[in-house]
Image (cartoon, rainbow, N blue to C red; front, side, top):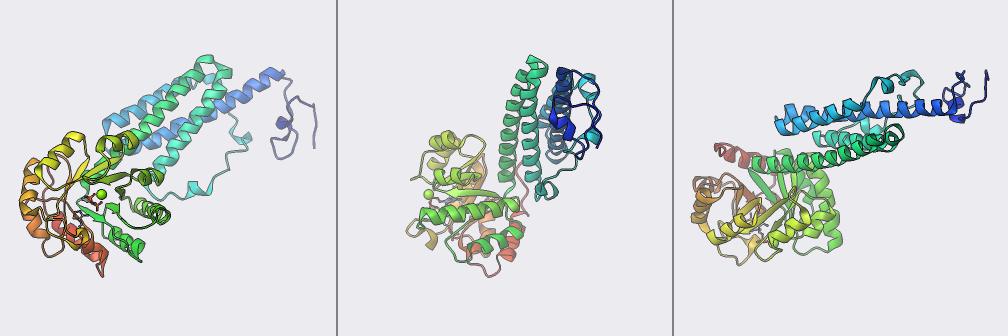
Length: 372
Ligand SMILES: Cc1ncc(COP(=O)(O)OP(=O)(O)O)c(N)n1
Ligand SMILES: Cc1ncsc1CCOP(=O)(O)O
Ligand SMILES: [Mg+2]
């Protein structure tokens, strides 16, 4: 081991595999400045790279000029701070952190997890830039604080946008009923192409509901499907669901919005024209239309009939799902009355082969041209 000079920062001595490094006779403050520059340089790169990854999805995946533009502008703002002075401090071979990866970095299961990980990376880097930036230039701390909040807003807007896009694309909606094989049935339907699931259990204890909702949310997100909770805003928040479904006897939409914000989905049941107009005026994201036929799943509730389906087809400007007694035998009658989307309970929950039934129902619904 060669020791030329004891420096003021022990970490400098230990930074290269235990070998004490030759240190130029810099002053303590010059050495400290180099360390800060290296931190800033590394985190400026990290923030720009993370944003670039998000930007590529906004551009090629979503084809969305607004989100792409926001990512690009943020990258340019970051680049403005990446001066030659900071770049000159780079010392990649001497950086003990370059080989370190987290197991999660190797394993991303969906676009969503790629985006989440990279938003997190950008936000962390910006927090570092905010704190260490203050030592370099007082304006740098302020600038990165603002940018970090802009990134939080971008993330939340992007998530909300993707949720609503998927809602509009969804043609089939599974509303669950209590079952021993709840998870495997839902998974089988997801394998058939289902993209929208509502957890509905009117009798279980909250502990059970919480556990099942958590598992279902994870499962749905693994398959890229939306996960909605029936009736309970608190449960939707507790499990970070994509939204809530509220009936006429449940919470007002306005309260749901206050609690869930605009990025989560709020659905409303409607049985007649008046309820539909109210749901539209109150800002529902989608409505249930039915029961189309009488059904044991909603014992005692009179059928609204196919006339109401036709009314919805002519008058509803948001996604709407015909519900109640719909199965593989009568789905084409419902489609002929004007439905482009349907919700079912028994047809899938009691199916022997939920994957095949999902595929069949979707094949019928996908024959209809999407609304312009
Ligand atoms: C998609 C969809 N439409 C209607 C309903 C019924 O909701 P609600 O009237 O609140 O009755 P319950 O489901 O709570 O018994 C629904 N759940 N989903
Ligand atoms: C929850 C609900 N709301 C109106 S009809 C209905 C139940 C539909 O169940 P099924 O598809 O088994 O007839
Ligand atoms: Mg309800």
